[in-house]
Length: 257
Image (cartoon, rainbow, N blue to C red; front, top):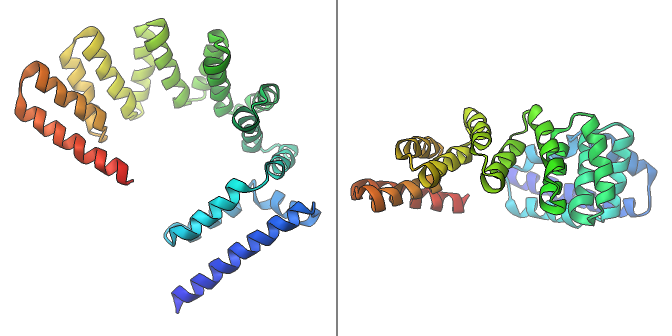
């Protein structure tokens, strides 16, 4: 009986959402105000996640399909309404929308700049990423990454460490950022610092130290590299097999999840 009631409730829920979408296409101010109140306070999506997290995947797929194909101009309208209410995540979202969907970089910079004034570190990071990947203006990239790092943005730390590793070859700066990330339990930083010691310094005790740290967080690439190290360098085949089997199991688990 409970399952049947749940089924009916979900059916009504999605039908209601569908009719809301139709009303929005007719510019209904009442519905727009409704969404303005709940959408950007995350009440609607949080309620959905709590209620449906443990239930039918088919229904959650339907919901996110509606979100994915919802008209972009309607999304932009919501963002602009939220911006009027000084909602920083919406300001960032509109910058992201112009960066990756519309590819209007003038508008992107406008909204990211507003978000940056409000100390949004994700906007700082994304603007740095734009300069790294698109304009190749590394001075602007570094400026924005460092701003984000001041606000403890770990993505910016990782990006700046990678920049120093691959572009400037400034390994002191690279290590500085990797070590901060490691203090915050970032297993990728552990792996890449281990890889640095394996390939650049040839300090295998340091390599092993950082690979083992990453392995504690089930980092299967660290397992694989440590296995290959024992295969090709130490010729310790029991250790090789141990880490290879561990890597295989963790890669399977990663694929399943």
